[in-house]
Length: 530
Image (cartoon, rainbow, N blue to C red):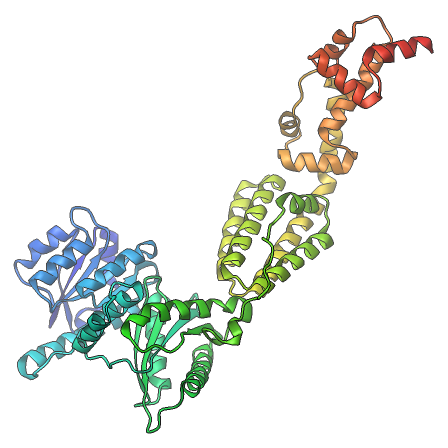
């Protein structure tokens, strides 16, 4: 019976791993547990496990250090990496030490974990059989993955080095190869399930002998396929080869999409002939796949085709006016706001720039999440709404989906404001009454909005909509009206300013003349003449 060791610093996670698997039933024996790499190495002095399950981040000695030490002790131990999603790129560094499987903790389901263990158990058995009688041992899948990841990361630069490593791994030499980047959007599938599904579907879909291929994830967790050759009695032309690959990719998308309705996108590189071209081919395939933003899902997009043609004419820099959007929201101009957003997304469609779409979407989201706290007194509700916004936006795949989502989100905000309007009108009446009574005291926008329990920005916009002038304009007008009355007496102009709440005589004189057209002394003279 093959032996398994768990290395994880959190007891509750170790307990969960122990509990989710019926070890003896699947022919495995759990022989040891450790809280860090150092403890694990001490346990291994009594005997090496066949399968090592280890976390990445641990105190004393982390998972990467442990794996490096284990590989120095034995190249045959099968290793499963456990990591959090945010540690995924870090976890992928372990590939260079020959990690066999990696599982994301948050996505890990008992069936995923059991399948991974069974797979490694079988490979342990094959390895033992090879040692006993076979002339050669097949390379670990992780070794091929590491080689391919090194290629797309640019670690392997020389053509001779690439060819030599490929030959050592038993991989077909490149003659006519293509890179395929697959994006499978299914929230119910974890990383391991997605990888297993694509591998399984590839086995079903690809005609035996027509081509050899390698499947592996990149450091972002997306699945990639490198097709090494098209084998046939008569090799098709590059154009025919590309058409054949596109048709196969379109059929493969349909196979992956049914019956669950998954959103599948595939980007395909141009033709490559050298191992050192794989890095550029990967970049091409990723760029092609991102064009789903404009072309929609369910397509195979080939780099450099008409599908990816960019606008030839230069276009001006696209800007968003947050002030204009806020003004339309507070003025309940739902129609005008929709037209503004329609034009904005029309310009984004013309530019065909994925990065620009993401930037503009983020700016619009920031405006939404800034406005809601101003118009709602329920802080918890606003927090939940923000989480909902970020979650929903992260799932949007196309420009059209973004357009519809933002129009609906802003319309919901406007409708919320309309519902609030009638109840908040009394607050504006209360504010005007307060100003008329206490105009001679210091009154700020912040203090008056706090008095009526409204946010400053919301109060300012609502006040202008209801009264017809801004808070400051209204306050100043009230003060100047009171000053007019006082100037009919014998008080000095500077004293009048102080009595109405404007302490600086020069400023009082300036404001008075701006509103009335004459200075305070001129106004007094005119009143006395009358």
